[in-house]
Length: 215
Image (cartoon, rainbow, N blue to C red; front, side, top):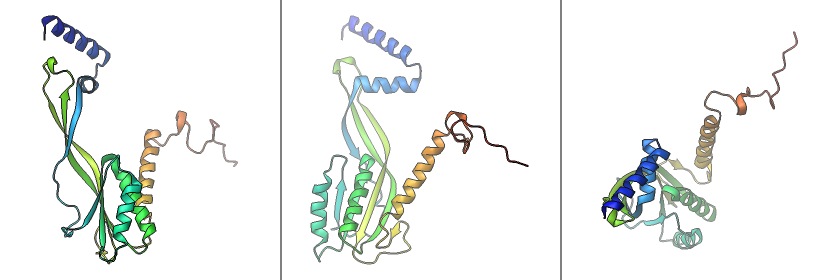
């Protein structure tokens, strides 16, 4: 790279830092502008559900997976008398899609026992410079992503196992999780101080003052 190009690169970096005084935002900008993600590798982790058969059917749900294709194969396998259980897994943005597949299966085949494990899985991302002549090195970034493992079985599972759901309890776990998430989001919107929009006191209506009780 010529001296003129180096000066230009340094000037551009100065302008960027002026626009993004926060060091965190500045680093994010540089990554987005000068790097591209070229590879994602899931690092090995301990199996969250113990004593799974080695030949168990595992449906690895991805972000771009087609639910119709996944369920066509999974339901076909579970409708066979020789298949007693199936495992659905998903990481990151695929977690919600894995949950959808599980609920479809439970509605299609009644009487399935379920064990659900939620945890974090570590992935390794490789970022390469967009312009190789810029003198930038490749970056390896490790991230923790939410992950889910759901075991569905025609046979009775350990009822004392954390995450166990008996047949018929379709949405108990998800409804509880959604309620907790909704409560968290509500607290964030209210600033955690119990005040509504615009600083109004809860229950006071649209900007009206609370009515005084008659003595």
